[in-house]
Amino acid sequence: MIFVLGANGQLGQSLQKLGVQPIICDITDSAALHREFQTLSPGALIINAAAFTAVDLAEEDASRAFLVNQIGVKNIATACEEFDLGLIHISTDYVFDGENSTPYTEFDGVNPKSVYGKSKLAGEDILLEEFSNFVIIRTSWVYSEYRSNFLKTMLSLKDRDGLSVVFDQVGSPTYAGDLALAILAAAKKYGKIRGETFHYSNEGVCSWYDFAKEIFELSQVEMKITPIESRDYPQKASRPHFSVLNKKKIKQTLNIEIPHWKESLKLCLKNLS
Image 1 (cartoon, rainbow, N blue to C red):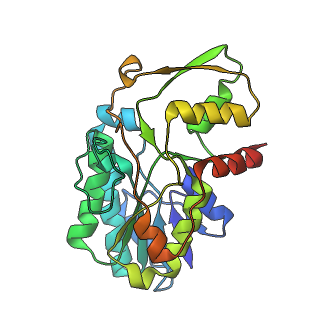
Image 2: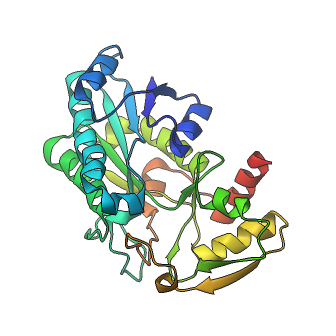
Image 3: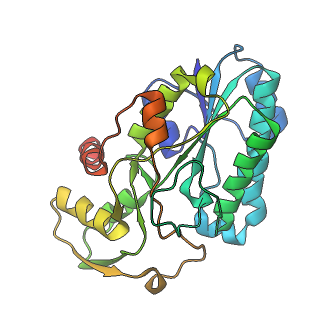
């Protein structure tokens, strides 16, 4: 059996659509996790999609970000170890500084620039240093039919006369439905890939400006979009300017094909309508 923590989030809901069972539990409460996990059969698999993901808020509340993204991960891994459960942990492109000019591999050096990135890296480090029964999958720019995300924000602004969107941050939008399928592919090979880190996003590269343009064009909405620099849209947390992940390892290891982001965006918009 496969279970997901963070069941109410974008990825959690996408996984449930594929038959994964939700576990509703506060990952910062180790006793509660132990109570939940002791009811599961040995060999079951836990997907940790629970995280403190409010990137700007993390700058103001670092203790909360680290409590969830570091201590929460340790609590999960400890309980998994005790009850002989596997763990697939979801991480982020924010562990990198975004200063590369070629896609980041799993072996590139990490250098997070935000509290969110540092807290997510701290969670990865605990797994790597203290445990062996886990798989880490890093992803980027996640959107879906569920919860709040860039796609739904853009659609909510469709009645405006125009929008300004940053063009100097580049990455690969990731449809949570595709990520969920990749995670289940990893689950099937879990025994062979334990201890490994993988990168997953959709194929193709774009800026937030390009992403916004495609959203409105596919939605057949007339929208004047002005490209701006990140410095013209100041935010509390530093964003990586280059978030492109190299996916060669996951494609070869799991023998999967990854859809282009434009194709997955069409699918998501179709599901939304």
